[in-house]
Image 1 (cartoon, rainbow, N blue to C red):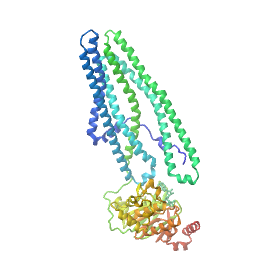
Image 2: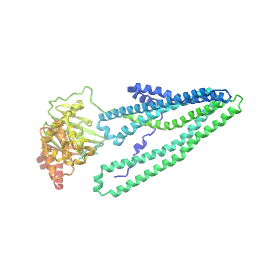
Image 3: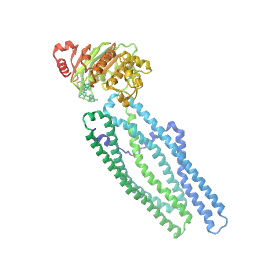
Image 4: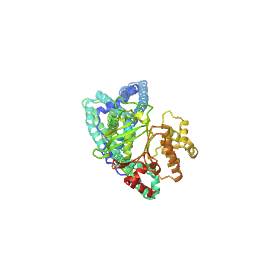
Length: 603
Ligand SMILES: Nc1ncnc2c1ncn2[C@@H]1O[C@H](COP(=O)(O)OP(=O)(O)OP(=O)(O)O)[C@@H](O)[C@H]1O
């Protein structure tokens, strides 16, 4: 475990963005497939925003009507009061039913949108070339699909529709207040910017404390994830105590941020509520003046009703203030998600790309390939060689000399800056990715297994492959014994839960996957991980079977592989400095001979 250092790029990424109409429009467009639900929801929102002011009006009407008449001595007002009360009750019940459906539809719409958005982002990511992944941090990609999509969901579910309800309620309350007493309404409206401002200042302090707390929590979770991933290294280096101390530090740090958030909340929330109550008090004083002293006195029923309406007008200010911060976060999240969706791959299949015929032999030729990951720093320089169909080419050289980069060119993970890679005479730039992937397979050094069973992992090599193909693949590698060795045979869980599959077994499973894919050209980065001698022999044997009858390019780390190669290419600083068979190269006493001597002395 390492101490988590703040990521300056992540810090620079704005957590909030100003409200943008273009973004809101794009979010709104995401609801197009659910237009019926969206329209019903909008109707419910309008209804809901009018219901509470209407309820206040109805209560006022009962007070001003039959109740006032009763206090003036008019007889038999009870039936009218009862009717009024029933009317109020029916309206209240209707208001609550609207609330239930408004909330449910908003939730469903938000979930549907975020489901679609995540699907779009995931699909888009699958199409991005390696260049994109080399430049973009994994954590950032994950947060696009998790937290940023989630801010969009909150934006739709909570911010958009709740704000519309609250905004509508303010307008509704204003209309009814204007009906009763315009000067008093003027006072109320004049007070609202002050309330908004006070609320805003307090809330921004609170949300900063909350953000700090969230960040410290994500430091805790990412540290746990990392610790689990590298537990073997931790135990091997006996760093358990050091790591435990670092982790304790992080959790107590988090507890401090937590306490701070609670403290700030405890101080600011009552202050915020008090501001609202002071405003209500003020309205009471001015209202009393209007009811008692003013030239044209206001009926007490109207004052009571007005007081209700002031509450309905002020409470949205608080809610909208809360929503505002969330809206800004949703804007930032939506902007990042849309930016990713708008990022076009730096290259994709050319127009009218050619399909490689199924009869392809696997003749590979690399002609004058030069490549740099970063401009001006060539990693491959003028590389040329031929690999006739069925031959095995071993790439050897010091670390960082460009071997893996060359394999990236052949698999077309990257495009060369100059030069051409051909398969059976076809320039691979002109081929469809799909047909190229069928002909060229890569077995990387890290034996990656997907989450799922061993069987599923082997079948991933080819669409439509059956369990019989998987067993045949293991048989062709002479490692059918794996079926008995694995605890549940082909049904054994692999991938992130693959603790039950050993390193050597994993490698063989990857070989079997390659056999199922049955490519004409196989690129293999030999694993350097230490396995016992018995496993090593089995792997070597299976490797021989795997490479049989196909063109293979092997980044070779094993002596036996190197020796049996038809051609060895020796890399040095991005150039091929020697090439030939093992014996020829040994007699030259050059770089290869020196590498070989060192290799033998180490093994
Ligand atoms: N994605 C990348 N972006 C920038 N530079 C890179 C990238 N990948 C590799 N390099 C650089 O390119 C050079 C060649 O790397 P490459 O991985 O091809 O070497 P290699 O011979 O395969 O090494 P090894 O035997 O250690 O795997 C190195 O200097 C490396 O730092």
